[in-house]
Amino acid sequence: MRKKKAEYTGKFRIRKGDEVIVISGKDQGASGKVLRCLPSKGRVIVEGVNMIKRATRPNPQKNIKGGILEREAPIAVSNVMIKDPGTGKATRIGVRVEGQERVRFARKSKSTIASGAER
Image 1 (cartoon, rainbow, N blue to C red):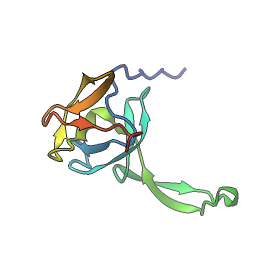
Image 2: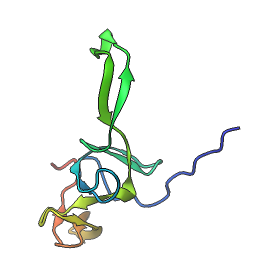
Image 3: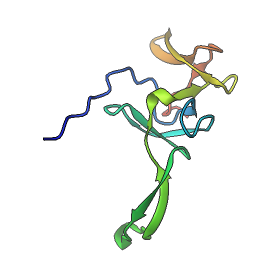
């Protein structure tokens, strides 16, 4: 019988469309936009980061050519930090109430972080 993997139970402060910086691992220092969030696994897929090669069969219906393709693999959410809109450096995220809504803000520069939908 296969052992069940533990689910990620931490807070997921990073959202799709956020600009992030990789803080550890082989792609340390790289930055990119979050393409997808996988909250149950505690991982995110970042544009141009953690590239892997995959052998792919051709599929004419989906207009996919076969061969060895390069694509992004998921990276642990603990290895990325959001990019501060004010300074462009890595920062932690806070939540505050502005008017009637809750907004995320950069802890370093106190500037508001626009969510992926607003961009």
